[in-house]
Image (cartoon, rainbow, N blue to C red; front, side):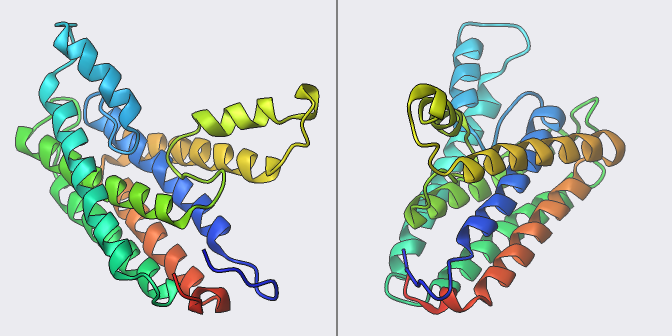
Length: 231
């Protein structure tokens, strides 16, 4: 990760914004696509176990599609990151954001006319799961390569663990406490906004909004002088 004491990195602010979009995407997938996650794979592994045991209300296929799509997106992001090694960080960020936003906008187009109550047309369910799964897998792998502490943008288990384990009550020094709380608040806020939009407008609007936030936030980050440094 580039370091520049004169111009602090804008990446933490970008990752907080991306955390908001995680809440949006999880609201879309869980509330609109039938209890499936496309940003957080831990839940899908658990639900897949439920489905394998024949638990009513859980089907194997959606979870397999989500997991495979996520892995595919992560694989592509890994190669994309390596291809941009040594080049200005802004180039890598903009390529990643463009890919993710495009996938979310295509999913928004697929979601037009989709009926959440009846989950029809059925093909749209799997298409939206696959598109958002690829986008989130791509995002996760990109963020992993950036190596920004306490800002994974998609999962909060370790963040919450750190808040408690490193707190003054536990004898710690509360490192990165503001960043950790901000991450929790961002995903929470995104989930609230996403839930409201899903209930009132369907899936297309929150998907389109997530794409706009990803691309606009990354473009703003790319304008920062620190983004000129090599990735």
